[in-house]
Amino acid sequence: KAGVTQTPRYLIKTRGQQVTLSCSPISGHRSVSWYQQTPGQGLQFLFEYFSETQRNKGNFPGRFSGRQFSNSRSEMNVSTLELGDSALYLCASSYHRELQETQYFGPGTRLLVL
Amino acid sequence: TQLLEQSPQFLSIQEGENLTVYCNSSSVFSSLQWYRQEPGEGPVLLVTVVTGGEVKKLKRLTFQFGDARKDSSLHITAAQPGDTGLYLCAGRYNFNKFYFGSGTKLNVKP
Image (tube, rainbow over all chains, first blue to last red):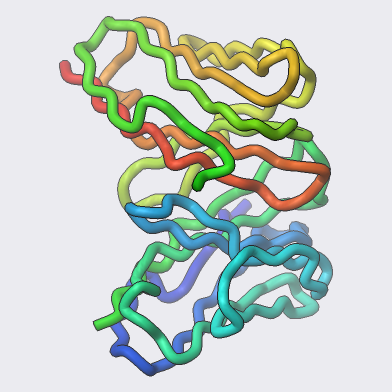
């Protein structure tokens, strides 16, 4: 089974621009979560989608948005980029949303905002 | 303020030594997971614990969930250079989203 894939792997943008990141979950998985990882704040939850509906949202400004398609693929968008948005963005997928569910992480997209 | 406090932040030890990493919170977890992340990759799940007092073993790794489900520990026996990486705990509250600890960066020197 192919793992979680994320594209692009690396991205350089300038302040004020917007960016769209893509995540393809493991086949059959319906839940996709997005996380931001920085050296200072660690791994922080952005949002979770399950069957095309946003189920949970973290404490990020409205510039961060996401969506999930009928094939479970997900995208996240960041508008009006700021320097502080430079981070590794990780996507994780799981089949259900059970307590013991395993989240499988992708390799991440490293975003650098100049 | 982190919801989950992980300690220590950094650990550098010699091959063959034992170590313990701690994960603490003032809140009760529905479940808790431990991950290991290597540079340039996403975290990989090591274990999930659900029941208070639960102990799980994975070869040289022993995971313990506190009786009150507010804390957890990861103990590595006879560490090897291949254990080097960032260890993360993640707690889930009420079937809700996961909160991650700040991580413990482990370096095992040969």
